[in-house]
Image (tube, rainbow over all chains, first blue to last red; front, side):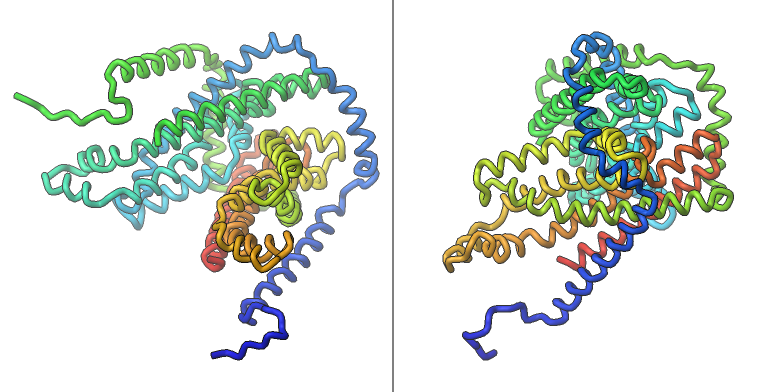
Length: 269
Length: 262
């Protein structure tokens, strides 16, 4: 039994742990200060100091919003919806085989195929859809098609990652039961695994669709169609009342799609 | 002969199922029909697509090495500072937005701030902050900090709302003040997850820092944008590969730290 000394305050008794925590904070502070200095080498502080004035000026230009401009936005909104939905569809279709190749219990070869599938997932996830769109616009030319493919490519990694995790969590006994009937590999996947992951799969797809709506609103900034195109042209012509309206429309779209996706997903689970 | 059919358990009613399929297919027809594609332009692009693929497979790290180095450095420093400042600022907002420990007015204020921060895309915020603070990494730093507060604030608030109440009661019973309760009863319960989430956000901030450069907020995005504009796909491929490698390294590191913490 350790001695209980009532006069001292309670303290953590793990010295080593305390030292590690202290060292972590020390390194973090050092690193942050260093990074701050490197980052701000080229900062023009004059511009930073007059930001409040600029902000007030900008706000006075932005309000009131140009409500009539909304008549020109309906078509762009429809395009945005199409980019998100068709892009999600493309991503989901491509993600399906990738997920099965990446899951430990369904991949044909853990040594060769699985790393490739994992790399596809990592590459797709690391690169934002806006960068994919930038590339695709330069390859395919501006338009909705570049947006759809960009959203699709970005969705592969997200959907495949969540899907392969849920494949790995499936119950092995039903796989065994189907195998014992002499079913082929595809029959096992079809009858033992797919029924188990279908709800998760739909819920992942709708979740991604919701994120994609959000992302497709800005793809137009690099020329990939949708409402972002109008945002970009309004910004370039300094038409701030239009910018305000577009941002309000984007916010409304995001809120509606989030509500819709939450509703559908709660029905699925 | 009787054959077995697997049951449809998602939508058991046959009529509903048919109706949903019909809506889906109708949308597909209308949606795909309204996509206007300039096939000539796309066809011409195939060439460039092939060039990009070969650039990705044979990346050129050297000819733009200086720009790439400067961009990556800017992205990384931006990520570090914005994550640290964002995490520190998200603590008061997260505590304030937790219903079980905050007074109503503070709760509403913090929730509103978090909702505002989360509903705005980083890139739209970046456009405004660049207009206010000038081009460069400082605007990017502010953008990422703002986004981090919303992200971590919400998750921290949810975490605090889901804590085990018994420990809070036990500490309250000793006559602890509000700060002591937060420190002794709540912090130990939410800390492991908070650390994990902070590293996850570090990851996201790095990825976002590659994007906001497109609108002038510093970082590797500006370099990437220039490379693509000049059709230098081999340099662009090199930048993308560096981004992928750094993101994978961050993910690996944060997984390791999360395991160590818990």
